Image 1: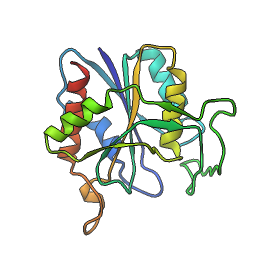
Image 2: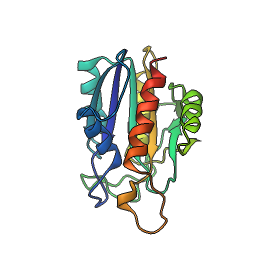
Image 3: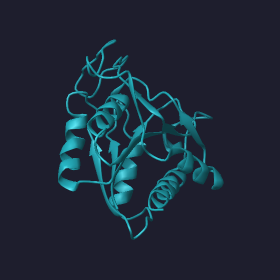
Image 4: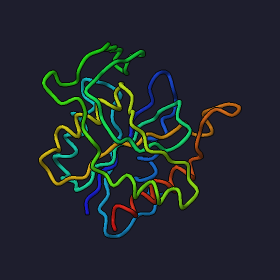
Length: 200
């Protein structure tokens, strides 16, 4: 099984994006995964104009069976398994190219939403068994994360690939007081569990 994992660079003035750290950990062999998996990873730009184009280029060269895209949601307190990608862009902050897009469809003629094809219920159950914070989510937002998610699902309606998007909280080192966060160790453990589940 060939699995592609993507994360994003920092954005909105942040110095750290936990999903970039996921990719770095994969590339340093710090996240255990089954021998049955051939794993590749990529850090994507937080830009509407080319975030998906960068992912698509990697998809075309690697030809994965599974694509798991990760993104940061600063207001989330758990790992959130996104169920749907909506056909909407509405950004209150600029992307990393300075672009702000308000109340626009991603595809003028596309469907209202696409559903993730990852086995979300099984992933949720495995993470809960290990005491890790996890929820199913019906909102991937309307920023670059959702844009990437929608475009990825749009391109893979007629393939056999399993594709989906997962939001994660800030790392504990990024926040103060009791703001929502996750430790890097728990984040790496979660990714390892997800990869192991995908190999079943």
